[in-house]
Length: 287
Ligand code: PLP
Image (cartoon, rainbow, N blue to C red; front, side):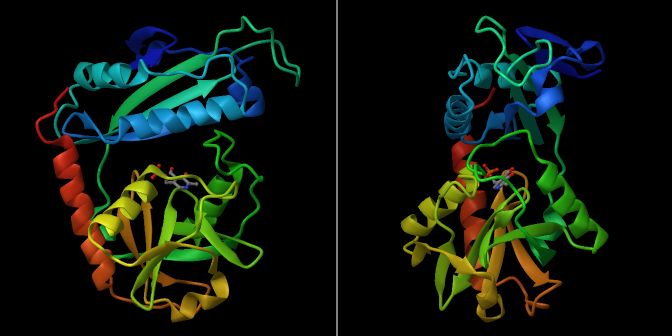
């Protein structure tokens, strides 16, 4: 039996109920976070909480501070016996439950806050060998910087990738390579690591931030600048980064001329630096 957290209570998952009037269900009127737990220690919890707060302000939720949630996550990790090994924590926050109407419900409507933890099987072979990706047109809204639960374009694009035998779909907006359905993208051009700049068209990934920090620390030349999908054939390395994929090389992109590329030296270097960072970030601090 798994324990979950719902609106202030730790309860068995099978007893968790939300209203059919929940605005998350009716309108996707909510935000979420995914935090990785390594041997019971949360990775970069403050950054994830800050992003949740940013999303809550963007949605004008009545509550925007969620400082208590790392403790909730740790308690769930303990209660579910996930103190060793890998796990993911999902936090879902919606504008709460109220009779259907587009406008915001009364101010005293409590938000719905739901937290779950699960065992996570790391994508080891993908990280070793690299993955296949496809390019898809970016049909998402213009606030991709908000980690909204409205993920329909991501779901459709990811399924399109799976149907094509690929692992991830990379969004292209007006000729620019933006990010994946659940990852940010980094490439190497002439020995320089490049990722698209933070705009309203991509999510400010926590892993993205860590990778930029590692590039800085390791004195790897790096830059945040626009990437053109037409330049992909000339790119030396491509990788996707994120909470679940960590640092995963892209071996090929099925619908462009980027085929059978062995994971490159900078990808490998960033992978091991990331591993080391996880070890440091989790050493000695336990739930
Ligand atoms: N971009 C999108 C669209 C995502 O959904 C995610 C993660 O779920 C990321 C990027 C990577 O973000 P993070 O490193 O915070 O997991």
